[in-house]
Length: 288
Length: 282
Ligand SMILES: Nc1ncnc2c1ncn2[C@@H]1O[C@H](COP(=O)(O)OP(=O)(O)O)[C@@H](O)[C@H]1O
Ligand SMILES: [Mg+2]
Image 1 (tube, rainbow over the protein chains, first blue to last red):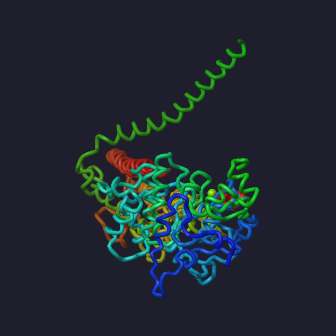
Image 2: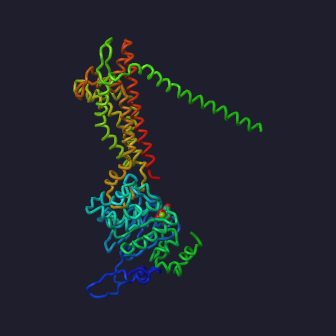
Image 3: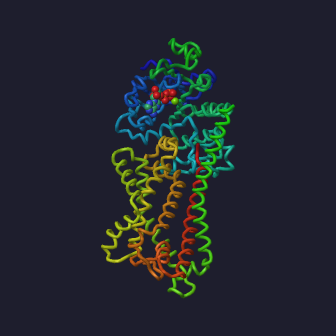
C-alpha cells in the first residue's frame, strides 16, 4: 500500500461529510464490507517522470486517486501541473521530443505500456482545456456529439446530447438553439459545452486543466458546482492555480513544486495542517 | 521650436512623396480598366457570349466557344490540380517538418517560379508530342502544372492557421490522428481552401502562354478533351495580332469578358475569405 492512499479516504470533502459516506452504493454479495477501504484506487501513478527534450519536467511522482473523487493539482506556474495532467491521457507524448516514463494504472491496468493504444485510452480519460475550444464549424449539437460521430460510436445521439448537456448544466440555456454555432455561446457556456463534449464519449476519468481560469466569477461558480455534481459519477483531476478553488472543489490536493510532487493528502489537511514547510508557505501565500 | 518646424516639414515632404507613389500605382490600373471598358463595351452584346467567331468583315459573331473552352480546360486542370495540390498542402501542414516536407516545399517554390511559357513547352512534350495532336487535355495539363504549387502552399497556410487547440480537443476525445486531420482540421480550414481554389482558377483562366501550343485554338464548339479547343486568352491573342480593325474590336471585348470573369472569381474569393475570418475562433 502506498502512503498516499492511506491518508486519502474516499470523498473526504469537508462540505458534504454525510452523503459522501452514502454515495458508494456498492452492495457486495459478501455482505457490508467497510465501504471506504474496499474501493481500489481509480488511478495509480508510480514513479512518473516526464521530459520535454532534455528538460526534466516531472520527477518521480507517486499518488493515487480514489474513484468518484476530485483531486486538485496546485502549485506555482511552471511547476509541472499541466505536464502531469497531460501524462494521464498521453497527450504529453504528442509534443515533439516529449516523453514520459513510469507506471500509470487505471483500474489496475497499465496505460503507459507500449501495447496500450493511446486512442482507446483517451476515450476512457476525457479532458477539458484551459481555454474553451469548441469546434467552430459545428453546431452546439454536433459539438457535443463530435466524439461519438468522429469515433463512429453508435447509439441514440440525440438522447446522449440531451443527457450530457443536462449533466453539464447547459441544457436549459441551449435547448432552443441546438443548431446554432458553438461560437454563439459565451465563454462560460462554451466551457460547459466542452465538458459536455468530453462526457458524451462516457469517460471514466475527467481531466481539467484550469477549466475556469479564462472565465468570469459567475461562470467559474457554475463550473465549480458542476464539478461537485460530476464527481458522483466520474473521477476528476483538476489543475488550478487558484487555491480557494482547490479548497472548494477537491477531496484531495496535490502540491507540485518545480517538477516534484511535494505533498498529497486530503484537501483539508493540505490547507490547514500540511506536513511540508514548502506546502505551508505556498498555501499561506508566502510565495507563488 | 525650429526643430519642430523642421520635423513638420519633413513630415509634409514624405506625405507628398507617398501620395505621389500611390498615384503612380493607381493611375496605370485605372487607365487599364478604362481602356478595356471603353474599347470593349461597344462590342458587348448578348450574342458575343453565345455565338461562334465569324470570319473577317462578317458582322456579329462572338467568343461563345472560347468561353466554354476556357471553363472546360480550367475544369480539366482542376481535376488534376485540386487533388494533387490540396493533398500536397495537407501533407506539408501535417507532416511537412521533415526532410521530405522541405523537398516538396522547395519543389513547389521552384515550380511556381517557372515562366508559364516553359510550363507550356513541358505540357507539349508530355502530352502533345505523344498524342500527336493539340488538345484540351494538353491545355488542362499545362494549367494544372501552374495551379498545383500555389494550391499546395495556400492549402498548407490555411491548415496551419487552424488553432492547435482544436487538434488537441479532437485527439483528447480519442479520435485518431488521421481522422482528426481530415474531419476537424481540414473541415475548419475548408473556407480558406475554397478561396485558394478560386484564386488559382482565376489565375489559370487568365493564362495564354501555356495554351498556345497545347490546346491551340478551334473555330467551333468543342467539348472533346482530345480535340484542339478555343480559349478566351488565345482568342484575344489571335484577334489582337491580326491586321483587321474588326478583330481588334473583338479582342477588346473579349478582354473585357475575361476581366469580368476573373474579377468575379476574385470577388467571390474575397467575400468567402472575409466571411471565414469573421467566424474564426480567437
Ligand atoms: N510544450 C513544451 N515544450 C517544452 N517545455 C515545456 C512545454 N510545456 C511545458 N514545458 C516546461 O515544462 C515545465 C512544466 O510546465 P507546465 O506543466 O506547463 O507547468 P504548469 O502547468 O504547472 O504551469 C516548465 O518548465 C515548462 O517550461
Ligand atoms: Mg498549466
